[in-house]
Image (cartoon, one colour):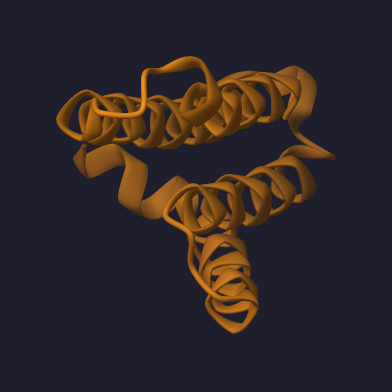
Length: 105
């Protein structure tokens, strides 16, 4: 979850670092950070499923990282707070059921 937080912070500060007239570059960078955040979430799901070290706490890690990842993506897309909450709920469901759908990616 630290990696998701780091990617979120860099993605949010990117708007202040790029020049004002670079809207296409800002859109591409935001999309890249969205894919990086979701890829980190998929990595957490894979690691907690495969590694026996996380047998007892794997579900909690998947649920928490799903909520954080999808809420961060919603904030990066400048969504209203109701959508951020809904994205966190969807992230909880994706994290809980992650051991089933991640096998097909």
